[in-house]
Length: 321
Image 1 (cartoon, rainbow, N blue to C red):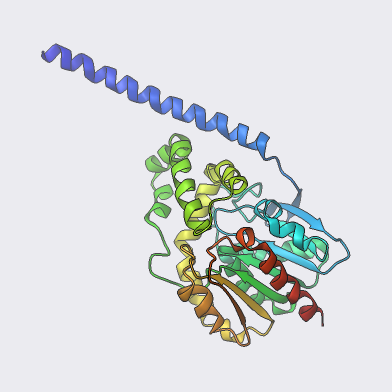
Image 2: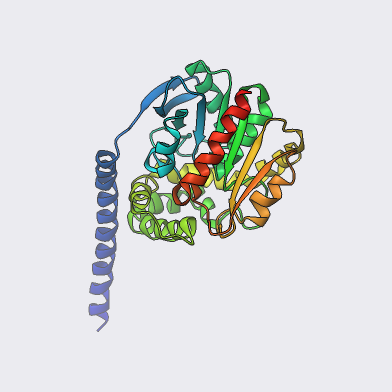
């Protein structure tokens, strides 16, 4: 009996090692498969602080719109959404992969903060030769847009903030954000278990993001491809760990904003709760316009593209005037 137990232990050990090796192999192979499905759609700009993937569209001679995606998002979120084609005839559209997301690299362990994103946006505007833009920010991207307008107000004509994360709140930082700081857990998560865990997380987060609407299949497939990449896991963790502190510092400056600000919020938003974020922010920004979607959640640019496009385009002539 004792001999049988001893034989089983090595067998289990080898079985576990084989399973881990299989997971690592599949994760590596799937990364290349995802790149084939979603190759870079835009141009990679060599900016001073790093290579940056930028997707452009719309009408080149129209007023420029800088679109900033949310946390764990990518620039491709904009052209895949129905909002893009509604804006395209009326604006020059510029969407960048933020540092660590999509095809804009950031080394694992490299700090990814709101401030780092602001610097990258300013460098991109300089490279494009744009002195002023209207900025559209979604979720975490709204925090970047706000920080950009506060740091360099002369570069921002107007802000359109969709489902903004703009104010510190309890529960904003998640325990999973600290996992990449533990070497063994980081290796296990990002090199072995990323495919199965990433699918579960994407399913849960997708349901929360689109609630009360069903998850859009194109969005889910895109997120499965990009959110299960080691670099993006690290970037997401950095952002989540530092966001509360950064928003706390920004909050005191919101009353000093002087550009036109439009805030769009869904009452059913599970990721940036409407009362604590969109509604509260609109009360702290002088003259801000709040548009409330009684049947909306977090992904308003997917679920309510007509209304979001109308609000965005309304900001252009106001900012031009």
